[in-house]
Length: 288
Image (tube, rainbow, N blue to C red; front, top):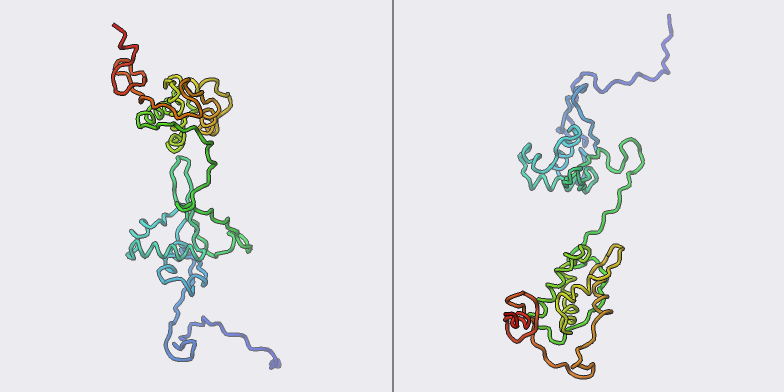
């Protein structure tokens, strides 16, 4: 007869041997969940216990994370689509998405499509901190700092411009009209409203020196450089200062200038001229 090997270790018994197990919890007391599991061969999703048993995520976030991981690529997971699918509502779903994003299970970025629309791209991570095919951490680019109203972007200051002696409202309006018309001669001389506010006093100082708006326009648009004007407002500020005409003969730099009449637009030819009240310029008045 064969002799039995009493030193051989007994064959371990399978846990799934078909026998009923005692419903006793991990602490030894009766109760707790009993698993009646069947092996899935189709339509299943592998979910890590780090998500299913996460210690900080809410139950809504865990369930939503499992649902998102079970979806095929291209499925819509925006708040409106999820709220239409589940009864939790947009607020709870939005909070759950933020939880998943904070713990690395979702990455949401704004991207521009080929058609120019901005859309949200969502990436689901079934194992945060890992690449899709390896075990090395997936470095994320640092977020770009957001600009707030309290910390606006710094911009270089424009050069100073001359100041008019008597900045009357009519004079400033005419100066603004001169600035606005520069772009009709050269589109490169288009300036913003903020830059125009800085340049208007300089143009007004030219107009105070008995120059017509047309003459100021020609002086600012004559002999422009062929190169691109990256800062047209700075170019105009320099030209307003460097080419400022002298004071009229009856003024001297050491004397207070005599007051001048404001600029008026001729009722007949619409040209600018100086007069105490609106009406017609001298040329139209002399015409028969």
